[in-house]
Image 1 (cartoon, rainbow, N blue to C red):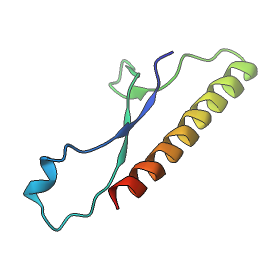
Image 2 (image 1 turned 45 degrees about the vertical axis):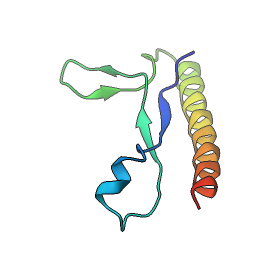
Image 3 (image 1 turned 60 degrees about the vertical axis):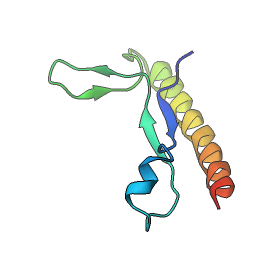
Image 4 (image 1 turned 30 degrees about the horizontal axis):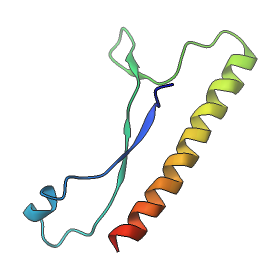
Amino acid sequence: MPHVFQLHLPNTGWALFDLMAEPGVGIRLGQHGYAIDGSIIVGPMMHSEADVDNTVNRLIAELETIRAQAKRELERLD
């Protein structure tokens, strides 16, 4: 299953432009869609309370995974 959130690791060549910048990571959107008004939609359309609970729980679990990955990467960069 595609992930909504992904760990963003800046290209090491990018850091050459700002030698004072500290190593860092970010979170970016992977799978997403666009609403008719141009806003970004993450996750499927939900039609019941169970859908809402399942979707939010899945997104939280993805963010927890990204949290762990980001911390490991920051340790590696130090």
